Length: 228
Image 1 (cartoon, rainbow, N blue to C red):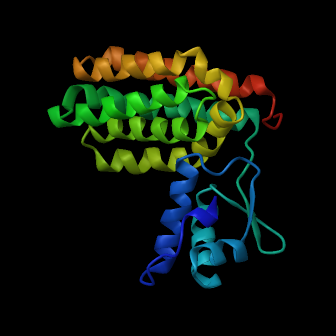
Image 2 (image 1 turned 135 degrees about the vertical axis):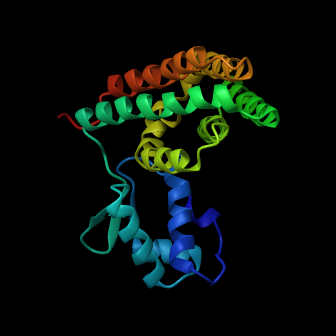
Image 3 (image 1 turned 135 degrees about the horizontal axis):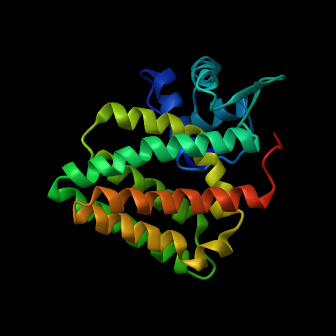
């Protein structure tokens, strides 16, 4: 995946490497347990080791990466308890975000939400399902709704949650693409966009909760999280 990114501009390399890795984590393009060597990251991004070390240190401080012996890093594998805690926090924080989006969204935000929902639906309906496209569209849709709340600090908080949640979504979509054909996520997304369009905070929260809790139950049911 890293070899698809290409070289980065030379200025503020530490921050740029950090944002690149953050983007991969939030988008679910790095899976729980996946290991990366600092050298492979540096080579893939055409930078020296120093900005990679800086980026990894920042992300490790956020709990988004784990530093291993031998200059390797790993995407953490959460325990069931940690994942359930993360899910509860997401429901509270992201539920508030969609309520505020329903109350405050600008009219021109609806088109982007609908477009991302359509991309997700198409990816889910394709044969076989395009799980990578679905993961990206899911992220884009959620953040289009959250940004419509008009609260930039809230977006920062949610992005930090997704640093941990994004990789786990691989278990829900990429490793089990057949589940996309069930249509639950498609229906939840449609309900969320419609509720925001109608400016209905209660319905928006209900749609989001349905989306998050259904995915969370499926992930726990896969049995791939660490017990505890």
